[in-house]
Image 1 (cartoon, rainbow, N blue to C red):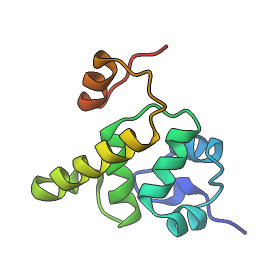
Image 2 (cartoon, one colour):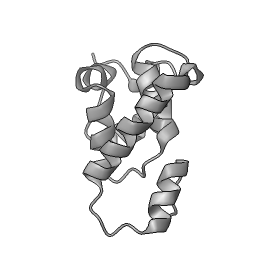
Image 3 (spheres, helix red, strand yellow):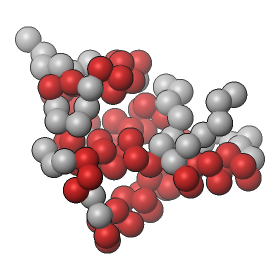
Image 4 (cartoon, rainbow, N blue to C red):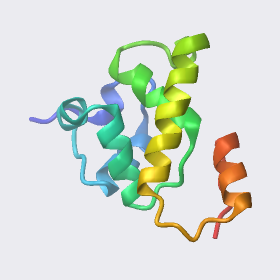
Length: 109
């Protein structure tokens, strides 16, 4: 029987629903894909980019507290997040969208 995503530290029912929408049904599938590919699939399925959610996912898959991400590690993840969002974005984004992405929020359309 598959293990629920919400069984992973830092990930709850909202994360579970987000991953299900992206076609990731279980903790095993999430671990198999890894954080970057799983987050890319979430973006492709309509999830708005949010840096905190991205690094929380990384920490979760490592079994670490979400707020354990600091310093150089957080800076490196920020660069990976920005690259991933740029890769997935089906442009038409505005300067405001990019600024809101930088802050980790996105206006609702």
